[in-house]
Length: 424
Image 1 (tube, rainbow, N blue to C red):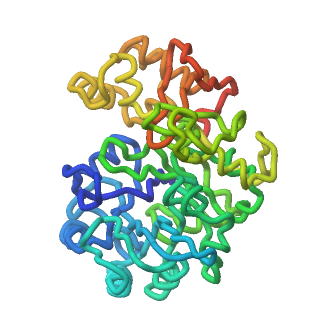
Image 2: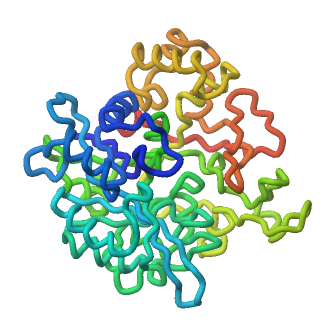
């Protein structure tokens, strides 16, 4: 069976997250998107964990969960993100975000008991703990030998394992003797697989993509597509599909266009200044003289030992997408969550099926008939990679040009990417 998985999300207990997030809302959003495996997010937070225990029930001995009494096929995996804060060997403070998946409530309870010694778990759904990344991995595997830990948004400047301001130049530096337990890394919104393929040191890790959603609408802006042989999804089969390269069960990732990510270029938001590190390696803002925020593309270039365009033989395919609400908002010239965008989105889902199906597989003419021609044209351009994007920088998302293709200073794409329908 095909499993579409988003393994990194947040609850309403995490900082700057929607108060509307409940487990029932997450299930409904997953069904709209076309996702059938979703992280619970934030299992370290006591109140959210209590809600998980009240609302979910185990699906047999699969290591996964579902809403009590629900007949939907959406499954939950116990997941959480932790910010580890520690002093590195170079005597600088490191702040690395890490994601964890666990196969049982018992293992979560055991892990939380250990983690509570390093900081307040109630302070935030993504707690900041005074411990090294290596200690976190050790505690996770001490709680359950089947834990799955991976660095979150690996390249982001402040909290990525390879971030410009708080990161390392290798996984071994970051996780020390516990690196042996790390088998995947999350590429984040501002990079995609082809950027990571340029770094040969990452060949041993599965490259996974997740939404890191802070509101239900953002679910699935990145995701993973797996092929599981079992009739029922199991925790163990999901982990194996991701990590066992020879099984060829990891079919593709669904990717943000990395230029749309808010840390792709170097820049300084206060001065509305950004720069392409491929052409100019400035370190200070020419407007005010302050330090630039060094972006993801810059850091990839720093660590890359392969040319742009290199594709390893084992590469997992990927497809770029733009969330459907963003497409509708662009065409209608409205904000993403305006009433008319919401109503158009709802009517398209009702008429055409899941969001992923609309973006990747539904016939373009049918989309035009049941929405409008401009929305259909925009989706065609996204599939054909003929859109233009003014890249994001310093916390500012990139600006999309889905139809006119006239963005000043924009990054154009010519190469045609395979659509999701080719992987169905």
